[in-house]
Image (cartoon, rainbow, N blue to C red):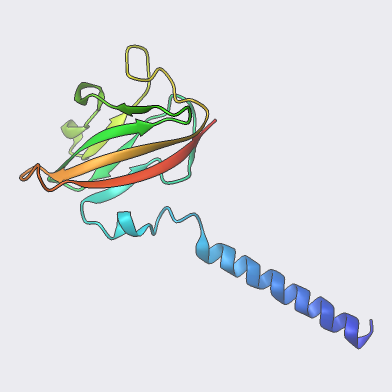
Length: 142
């Protein structure tokens, strides 16, 4: 190989390595999302942002002790659906602090429509219902 060809190959390899490093650093944002990790009320999103789920998978939010939530689903077909409190599984028996919704017969959604769906969770400390925060995230349904 000529010197010029080696220089071009070296430059291309360097650019490729740089792109891999940038891709690794940017990631999907799920674990380091500032609205999750920077907020002591939120332990996690179920599913994490931009995850892929099945049409009847469970969705919701995992909160720290002492917080409550309500859920609203924004579907890929343009509907905004508040989830009634009696359709949210809270898992308080196991002290998990999770507020979950699973589509099914007789619920506000039988299944999630395909493509991108989103959740808006309103959260508040159980000592002060007026101190509401909201978090919004989307996921893909296959």
